[in-house]
Image (cartoon, rainbow, N blue to C red; front, side, top):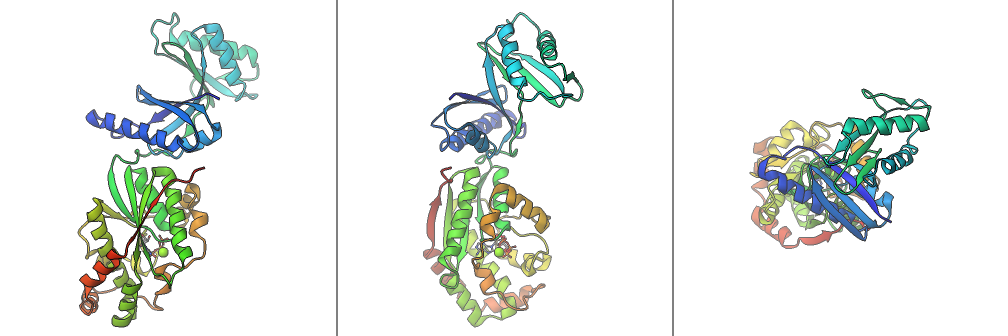
Length: 392
Ligand code: ATP
Ligand code: MG
């Protein structure tokens, strides 16, 4: 099998030197994404588009993979014809047959990259269009609001013909922005926050706080599975699993229960910041959404964020649970997120968590802890897992 795809990308960030950087990242990401589904693929860039040629593999899997590569705006499977007009018409009618139906409003759109081709673009469009109208008497030409476009691209050696445009995920290629440290729980929100950051070009690394034996190994596996799902969009993800049990026990023993969520989250941010600095990550990323739970009121977020100086990205801050769930389903993390294994926060959740914690109270409580020792100890026990995209 040989299949050819035209891949369009957006114009964002395409100025000056950035352009080459952007294009190289996209090309590399396309190659990586297709590794598991196509034994051989060639990618080349021309006139703000990529052409991807796949010589073996499953066409549907290739299309599905390309739809996961950020930076791609749309994809068109292309068939080729020679530079002979009769051949162009023959291939065009073959392609058009796949979309034609009674009443269909269509137009032919020709691009003549090869200026030596004897007919001008409008003449080719008119000729091919007329030919199709003859063959398919039930369709109509509509150049203003067509439902289908048959594209004819006349190039140096051959002609490309296509009718389909499959939407891509948009955004920027992963790798063009910088590294971000995602605080990932097993819930619905944080994987979506990670996906949205990758969509803006962020290379993800992840940190998960695990409270074994209060939370099971299954809870950890769930997070690994979520990372694997995210890796299918952005490539390999390094996950740091931080053992959080000692810290939680210490908090429970020495600090007021109603502050426990705030204190726990401050500890998470401190540890995540240390790790981010060590790994060269430029931001922490969380799945917080304003007002969703006690720890996500403006007051809580204010008190919690005091402990870090690194920027914290909260891509979901203005979204409702329903909106987040829609994305979660679309990107494939939802079925994993709803598996029932307990998260460390749920286990230690107080009956009446403070929704308006005061910084003074929180700092007083923390004064009773040997903060540095707790942080260094849990960092010392951190487990590193490199997670690759699923091989499907
Ligand atoms: P999620 O669906 O992502 O679990 P949530 O609505 O349950 O979010 P919280 O439990 O308050 O909200 O967590 C808020 C954010 O804090 C999460 O989105 C995540 O970024 C981070 N977080 C929570 N628990 C953990 C954990 N065990 N490990 C790492 N990060 C966590
Ligand atoms: Mg949660």
